[in-house]
Image 1 (tube, rainbow, N blue to C red):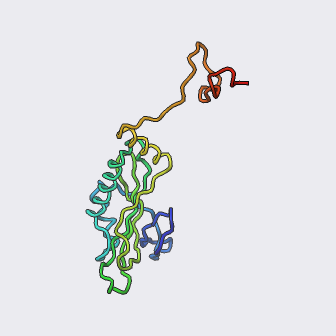
Image 2: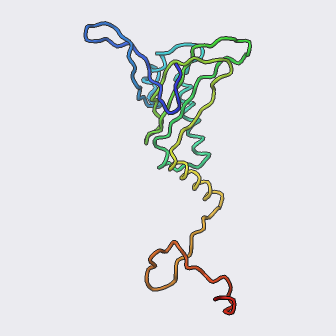
Image 3: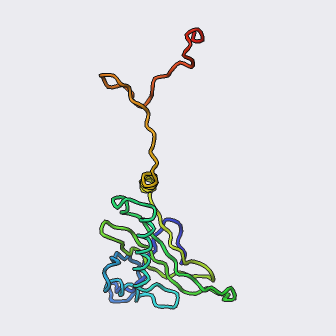
Length: 186
């Protein structure tokens, strides 16, 4: 099951229909990483050598939080960031076929990380194993500005006119003559 850019994997689970028959449906989990019991129940839906465990999901949330700390992302701007991780596949190149693994998607909420996607994934040798963070453009701007402030950079602002009345457009400074010599100005 492959997922395109920007999609959130959904968990496939058996559900009874109106006639009592068991059918496979998809549902999006919404489990807090700090909720041990619910996280364990979620991870038991996929069991295998190349699937995530509850402790690995908690470690992924901690790693994502550390990355946000490293780039000095303000806490007020962290809500909504999405972290995706595909379990690392076999290392040996001689392992010539794919294995059944898992993909987990976390979303940063106001109170912490939540699992919003946990699904099976076909993994090929030397595939996966990296944590990818997706942030919105305004979050990227906030992180860059926070890094600049931490490194001592100051952004230059245009000077405002020093008159008693407010300027009509304070951002655009008045044009100065090219030369201060009056004979060159026509």
